[in-house]
Image (cartoon, rainbow, N blue to C red; front, top):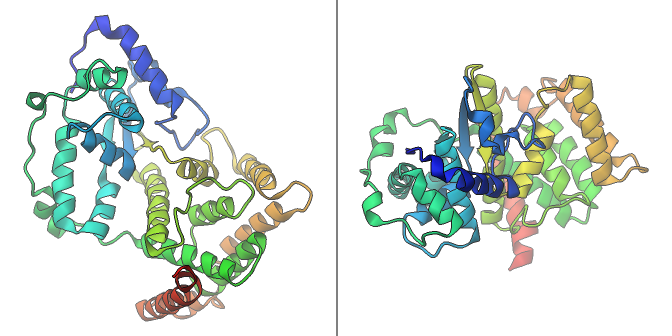
Length: 354
């Protein structure tokens, strides 16, 4: 909700610069462009824009209504929320609540969702003032209360647990197992692709994420730890990328999906996972080859070989020599494989940390 006030035009420019400074709005089809962070691009635009929020953005937004001290991330989140309201971009926290439910249960997730609804419906002028330091908190009278129960009301329609979550976890665990066995970073990636080709599911976001992690371009805190919690965190990050891919594929053509995140690793993974709107397939592959040569070295050909393995895998995804195809994707086979990897992860990774 936003009440237009022409005298705030200069404030809007400051808000825009804050959103741009942190690249808080990403267009997955053109990740390097600043156009999602420019308010002028949403005026008289007949295309509908929606924004998928990552869990940290959701948490920061809730904190803004809890009268916490407004630190840097919260101030930038206030700028983001003001921007979304002014530009009339609908935000979607849905994936964050899958993660809340997984970690804390549906009851806690439902309460958090009610708090988010309250924060999302505060007048944007308060967020402008918070972002610019004109006020230190949102007055309690400005925050409407939303009832709990939204998730419970929809319990019968709750989708099953995101199908890629367990696949992401297993890929990350297998990579860390291989690293614990003394393989070099490059050998880890080669062995991982071979293992997935023989045994299991594969997703491009997981491949790109792990390629960045084990390369010279590793981003700080991509994997916050090699613990179970660290693996889960990375798996949810990958689910966010996969959900963005799904939204862009499945929504009507008049809807354009953006992403808001502070996470540099998610942004880097999205840049590799998405073909830009102006690229044909050859241009996209050429860009990937350039990026991978930057990550793995220009002269040794490691990046090109990794991409070749990815291409070979895609061409043989339904090959009957693959165990997961041979066993017809049966739940028994998948559960057995998960148990085997979980045990190996405990023995070779977690045991070394204790």
